[in-house]
Image (cartoon, rainbow, N blue to C red; front, side):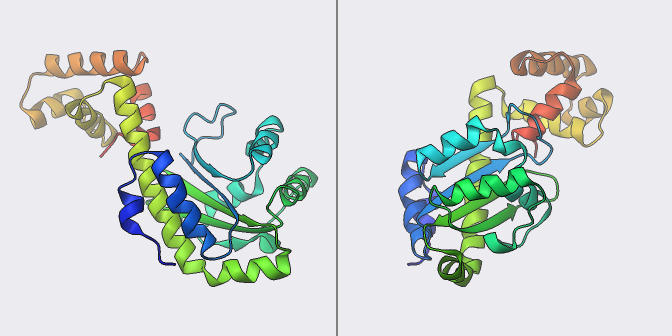
Length: 237
């Protein structure tokens, strides 16, 4: 089955997106999937930048969270610094804890694993598509590998979808306006208040007022903190 780009790109919610992705991954042998997108600088326990699309057994997600495996997940560690898909049998495993995590995953639908990183640009949001099947590795992994190019394309499209969703969510939650995100983009590029005022054809006082409103909407005290939030939530051009 070919990936239906129209259905994927036009899905307005995760509820609409889920059946599209389930059909897509099943075409190359995946019974289960999880897609995670995050900002690569986020190593926090709160995982504030993480967004999940979950198409696997809920028991596995409960175990994953309860054991805080997201802190040491070898699949995430691999995807942060690599762009090529990797079979579970070739995944670098550094610790006994990581090995145990994969053993538990195998009992929850991920006997065969395929990890597909997605990197859209240099320092922006990244994605990780986890694919799993109850087939043993020697049977399931070759099927996954046949879909390598297909899964890479799917992971990139899911990253685009997730990035747009994160931005829209942040804009709604904060009440930020497009002109305010433009100001933050200029700050990120190194413009000082006077230069921004000249660029936008307004007074420096107006720019400082915009800084204040931006900080209030985001709930921070410094514009540098607002920029960090904006970076993590895809608000900068």
